[in-house]
Image (tube, rainbow, N blue to C red):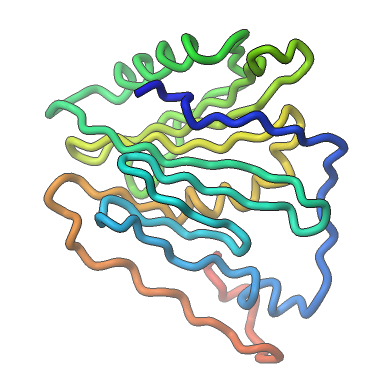
Length: 210
């Protein structure tokens, strides 16, 4: 199954960061707080920010969000793949990159780093590609690859070129709350939800670990 089959043309233009209003305590711990979302087969979970929808489809879970002010859409996905015992992360990431290049005309890497996702080392790269049959349309993708035992996870965010910043905070929350399961660990318990603060309840923002 080609890695890029889920990439969808996004005609996002003129994007700007939305203005946020309301009680700052609610922004910190109330309506803006992500909810814990678990994949139906128990293979991973993540913090899903407000406004995102999820659709599991076999070994790929698609996520999308419509911009609350202007109606723009961003797409994310988590692809799950079995891998052999002892597979090397760097070698697997190179294989994924080769697959990506075959499906992404004018593939160009913007940056790459090595974060930790769910306690596991990961490889993250940002790249652009030209949408097929659209010479002037480029999309921007952030791709994160991590291994949990004999199971690989490819986590992606896609927007039109230049629009990544609008959805970046949400994507970072997804990554921060991501937990992958190795085969046989699907029945393990999920982390406890953080306490939800009621509207008007005062908290010490310096004591909130988020």
